[in-house]
Length: 112
Length: 116
Image 1 (cartoon, rainbow over the protein chains, first blue to last red):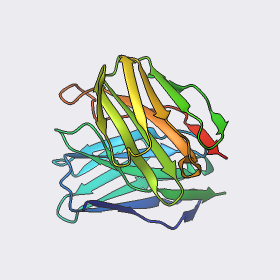
Image 2: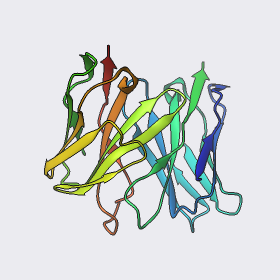
Image 3: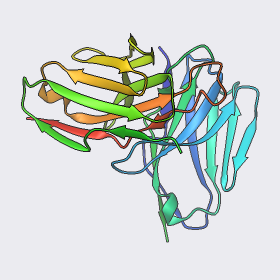
Image 4: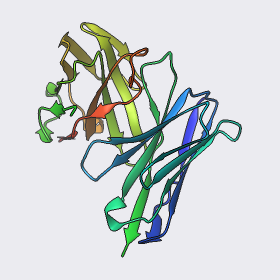
């Protein structure tokens, strides 16, 4: 069965450093991968999408890589700030499908 | 901006009650989804709908039903609430495959349901 794995342990980093979050998947051939941010008690908010034929995508301080050989995506936040503290979810999708498959999320805490 | 609203932020119900959770979106999206989110289990898809009056089961449909009478509104129904349905319920919407930007789902704020 398909499986999406994100670091289950919370990631604690110091302000100004680069945070790197991992999303691994098995038994899945996604056409695209997305990253969402979720704050406590709120719904997820879309951040970035990367397609299977793209290696890297950037948006301001965010960078996503997608390696379909390794079946892995890395999500980087450079120059991290305490306001970046949240849970980050990866989600995989297919062009022919309607629904996304979400990972369980990784909690990020950025301390001053 | 896309807006997805849910009828309640918090809800407390008794075992056996019938519960209605309402979701409304204002972006003319064809697709609408209901998820539940539990600690350690992540987001799990209950049902989705790709058109008015159309619905498809997700990964965990047991104990739930849905209704989509209008394009902008998608309701989740717990016919007889049980304590194991205590959870955070999230509604989302998106465009269909083939439309630009269809991959992105827009979520509502969530309804935290407690069944006693």
